[in-house]
Amino acid sequence: MKYRAHLIIEGKVQGVFFRAFTKEVADSLGLKGWVRNLPNRKVEAVFEGNKEDIETAISRCYIGPPMSMVINIDIRWEDKVEGFSDFRIRY
Image (cartoon, rainbow, N blue to C red; front, side, top):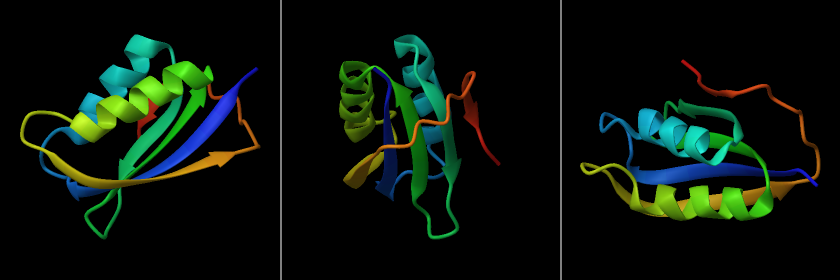
């Protein structure tokens, strides 16, 4: 069964390679979806795949890349899975 998690990540998450880090995490776990910067200095991400792998990705996002500092992640588990073909950085 496929799962979907929609994240809003807050803290020092822009200008620190957070999107590239998130893509590397997703790719390493075989997750699909996307990540993008928001105008309010937060990062938004959608992960689709195995629930355990998504939970691992979320845990890694709390750590983030070296120069980041995550203070909160708002996580919404959603029923609708779009079936993305890969994980992309959106601009």
